[in-house]
Length: 60
Image 1 (tube, rainbow, N blue to C red):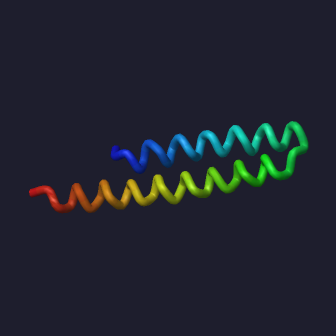
Image 2: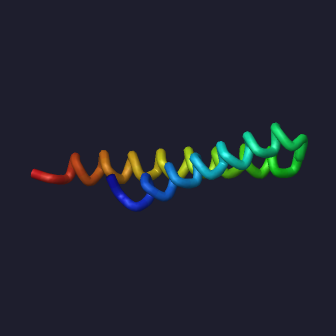
């Protein structure tokens, strides 16, 4: 697991919390920010997965 995957997972978790708090409080902006953070985290996590796969494929 590389840095991108760890940071991406953390962003996903932070986004989920923000989205949930936004839903509970009725704050549409916070909810939208949470969804955006989750999406950003998923992308970064996927990039990390690709990097891990490439790194694994290049090892003899």
